[in-house]
Image (cartoon, rainbow, N blue to C red; front, top):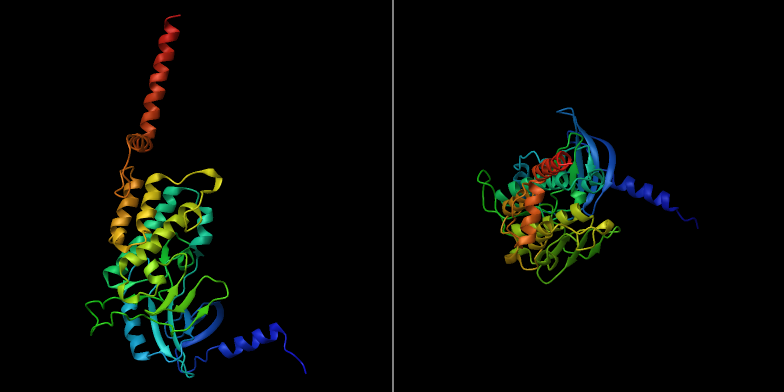
Amino acid sequence: MKFLSDKALERLREGAETPDLAGTRYRLLERIARGGMGVVYTAEDENLRRRVALKVLDVPGTDVNRLIREARVLAALEHPGIVPVHDVGTLADGRVFYTMKFVEGKRLDKFIVSVASVPDRLRIFLRICDAVAFAHARGVLHRDLKPANIMVGPFGEVLVMDWGLAKILRETSNSAGEADPEATIFEKPKQTNISSDATEISVVTGHGTVMGTPRYMSPEQARGDVEHLDARSDIFSLGRLLRFLLSGKPEVVPIPGGHRLDKSLAAICAKATEAAPAERYPNVPEMALDVSKYLDGLAVGAHRESTFDKAGRFYRRYRFFILLIAAYLAMRVLILLFMHR
């Protein structure tokens, strides 16, 4: 009896997964990634002559009509920092696919290595907040905010990607009907499954299915408490994301090189990641406001400053002028000493 090699098995698997796009307007180009919910390819939209990202979902038993309705909600998220769904449909074998804009660039966890300045990292974070706040205003939670789902394009554009686990809280005003309060787009069936790279987890709990990334998901999301999720769940993920931008880790860890995280920034991260949702920022704009205040040298709401902290912040804000005045006074003293000799 002959056994197939691992490479041969992988080729057979890829061949079985390769979608038959007959009857669609897309022409398959190449496979680029595999996630927990399906395989992503590049394809050409032959009608519009453009390249798109096409994801084929391995979700048996999906309610296609519900999925299409929810895809329309996400497609309405027209924001410079969001890559929405372009199209959704069903292949001949019954699998669902959707397409979106193909984005070239680097994942945030790769791109951030080249950004040494803390203010520059915070400005990237504010652009992420802007996109997430826009989605929240239209009743959509992301539920899987993490560095791997943020893309920085070749011209510095910051894009929030992969809305496959998005939860629809309510439909936008231009959408018909009432949304299921527990509706999600491209929801996985309830099953126990941990991906090979251990970055995503899906387990059944008493409340529902847990989906997301363990180190970035909120405690209520980790419990599968789907019916009580709101904007504060994404705020928890943003807090972990901010700490990653500042320290390289989403959890509280010592900063490399022995440096401590600034007290104001540490307080912002701590407030965003409180275990109780009521203790977190109530919405993304308030969290972004604290980050903006820090960048402007102002006091942040999350941190109660001591007199020493206020003095340090005053110095950081007016460092140039303080040093200029100090240099001027030092020069005057030297001149006076020289003249009295």
